[in-house]
Structure formats: C-alpha cells, structure tokens
Image (cartoon, rainbow, N blue to C red):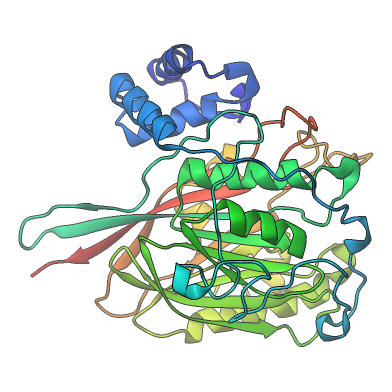
Length: 406
C-alpha cells in the first residue's frame, strides 16, 4: 500500500511504529511497504520488537528456486463471448481439470493435488525473499468460555488475460509471492489461464490447487495443505453466461469449522448488468441452501455496482457483506481503482468495489465465523515491468472461529 492509503485515524504512535519497523528491516515506506509493516505489527500487538522478530523469522524460512526462463505470450488468449465447452484448447498450453493432473506434474502419490500439483517454490518478482506470516491459530480457553481458531482468506482477480508487455510471468509470480507472504489458508483466484495456472501450481507446493476449468480462463481455489481438509468440490456454469462464468464450490474443514467456499467471477461490464444480477441471485440462493452446519463464504470478482445488489433483492436474511462487517474500512473499499492502478491505461478515472466477499453463518449452535480484519494487497508496483500484479487489488481477510465449549 502506498503511504497515503493507510488510515491510522490520527494514531501517531502506530505510524511511528510502522516507520521504525521499516527502518530496521530495510523496507521502503515510499515503495508501499508500510502496509506490510502494519500487518506484522497488528499481528504482534503493535510490539515493534516482536514484529521484527516474526518478519526476520519469515525471511529466514523463505526459500527460492530458479525462475523459468520464459513464459509464452498469451496474447491470443483474450476470450470471446462463447460457451466454454466449445472453446478450443490452446496448442502447447497445459490443461487442467478436476481429477486430472497437469502434464509433467508430480503424481498424487507424491503429495501433489489431483488438479495440478505444485512441485517447487518460486522466486520473488522483486528479487527479494518473500516473507510469510502464520495464519491459522488456536487460542486456549477455560471451560465455558469461547474457544477461538483463526484462518485467512485471499481473493484476487489476477488478470491472466492481460498480455501487455509480456508481463504475465512477473505479475503471476508477484501473486505467488503474496501468497507466500501472507500465508492464507484459502485463496480464491479469478482470470486464471493455463499458463498462469502452471506457474502457480509449481510455485506453491504447500497448497492444493483446485481449478474451475481448463480452457481459456477460469477460477481456481488454493487450500493450504496443513490447515485445510478438502472434502469435495463442484463447478456449476451459470445458465445465461456468454463469458464462461461459473460458481466453483469447495467443501472443507478449517480452523474447527465446516466451510462451504464459493468462488466466482460474475459477468463483466455495464452492458451485462441484467445477466450479472441473475447470477448474483443464483449465488445467493446457493448460500441460503448450503448445508445448515456450514458457514458459507462467497466471493471473487463479482463486478458489482451497489444498485445491482438492490435489484437482486438485497442481501438475503443471514447473509452479510464482509467488508461492511469489518467496519467498512475506507482504505479497503475500492478494489478496481484506475486513479491509482494504471495497468489497463484507461483514459478515465473510476473507483469501483468490484471484488466482494459475503458470509452466511452456520445455522443453530455451530461455530461462528467472525471477520477480524479486511485489507487490500497488490498495491506495490513491480520493479521489472513497473506495473501492478493485476488491474485489481487483492483482498486479504482474517477470520476467527468462535465456539462455546462445555
């Protein structure tokens, strides 16, 4: 994040702590690292020494491997409005489908996921070792008091369709670096293409990759192997889509809770608002009818404008907007902001909250999933291409899971 994007609400002590953290660790405030400093400090109760120790430990734990020499130009991959089943598979591009590994990927018996197994680590696009922070945790409690576990989720449209200046490799590797840095338990990705999917699968060996398609572009969900138990997954195309849009649903256990994870990329552009509203209604209906003992998290690049949520009938009973639940932080509102992000080189300036997350709690007396922190990532310009990882900012959200113990 840029310095001006962090809201310390007049708290000079917190800002000074961030400045001290950056000074000691060598991070650069003017390059947007103050957001990273804030993240470590908040995780450490604003104790600068503890935050620095965590950061340095994460740096020492990070590892690098040799970066691939090149990535083929995906310029021909900009999809036309067509049905996904009729789209041709690009020659020479790796394919992926649920239950089928990528060509050349390790087998499932070697610890690889069935949808395209990761095989090795990856270098930082900036040339620095990526840091990491621990995500899932458990807090002890005495009998009769709430016990808490935590997990972290990232959602990000990584713009695999943009081949401008052949930046796909550097931008995708920057997304992988962000995953290594924030160590989420769950990642929702949109606009993944076979080429970027191959980079992701080989760069993140600690994650199970579940893809929502195999041609043109699609969604994908990453699950951290050590903290998330994958139960099942499903893909449902929207009946009226002309842009190959679907709901990707993954059933998991994480942080002591049963979760239904719903990742999607709703129809794009103003001209397709009617279809987008229909898709939102379908997604909300899926949230309402999900297993009663599951908490449901639906999100991704939903391309929504606020009036469209109203046209869809508003939020269903029991469904909440996670950004609003998190206190509606103004610095984390606009995920598509052409006044700051010039990747698309558009002639106009606009700010939109296209990327969203929605939550439905488990019914009855099951564990409650409570958002603790909601912030944006991907706001640092990359050193090589001098562009951002995507034209969208990513969202990182921390949750706690509360359950009464007896």
